[in-house]
Image 1 (cartoon, helix red, strand yellow):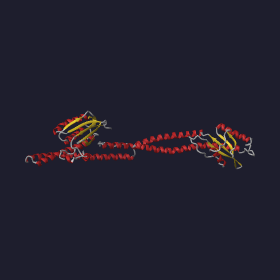
Image 2 (image 1 turned 180 degrees about the vertical axis):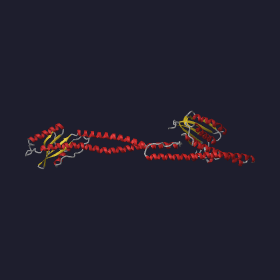
Image 3 (image 1 turned 30 degrees about the vertical axis):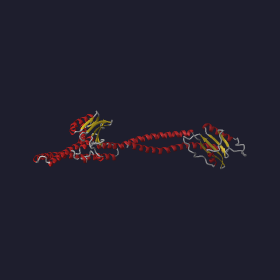
Image 4 (image 1 turned 90 degrees about the vertical axis):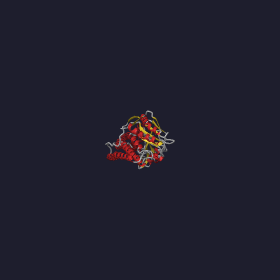
Length: 468
């Protein structure tokens, strides 16, 4: 969740900083240019004042008279160009030069200088030339009219290089960029703290939920910071977990107590049935059926008690040699399989994993017992041990009748037995006990077909130890 929330906050903060920084940068560039434009307007106004009283020849053929004012104007323009490197000139309405510097510069026929000149002829002084950006290598043109007796007689034009203007603008932008970067770093740090503060209770709640889902019902959400709503959610979750644990404990206690309390009356009942059988004719089918059902009921009660204990017992996990344990169970069940005419073979190389040896042995007993029970005479039950790096597996394969797809989906449910196997001894709780024992230690059990026929049961236990 943090990887999704943090980029969203960063994008939003970056958008806010850009929304503030871009107008500031544009305003800075405009302010720098306006400062230069004001200076150039002042310069052109001074040159216009000097050129105002410079007169042309009456016939217009000899150019401007060489009088003192013209000499002064020419001298000022030359000095201005030498000091500032700015081209400047005064031009009559016809475009003929009154005075200009440098000497080779003249009024072009088109372009920005000509546009400024034409605008000044309309008695409008340049006050808002196009913005010059740092990446544009062009000059800044400012023109002012020379007015005599209310008429525009000439125009003063300055053509300024913009290197310094662009440098100052770029420097200001760098300062703004540095400020934006610093603000962005602060914003990212604040976002990290904020997301950590908000999501810490969520992470704790997620870890606790996982612990409870995997069987550690004693886990609770530890006190953590975060918003008040999440702290209240943590308290509510703990209350819910307490109530669920109480209900499950009451259920387990009821099953265990009921199973335990029923065993004594059932044992007395079976004893009386046994005594009653001595008074009946030998081979009475009804009394034999009653005895069989009584023994089956006793087995169901024992399995119920085992299931209740398996579902509520903490696993004692330790590093266990799965191969040696499986080989031991194969050896223990070999006489039973041999008595039934079934071959029980094992391929159990040394393989270590984290497991509760007692619980895993009990689960394997239920699986092997089930395989031997449903395997016909002269068939084979195979037990194999392997490891794939993350888990160790024990595969028990038989060559019995197997199960259909519908039956595979239900195998392992409590009290479920296939309709084709109702005449075989069992309570339908053996595989449920195995699943509960394995789940307590982080293991699992799966069922599949064993080609060409039969059932393959795969028991998986983790090779990595439990995390804190």
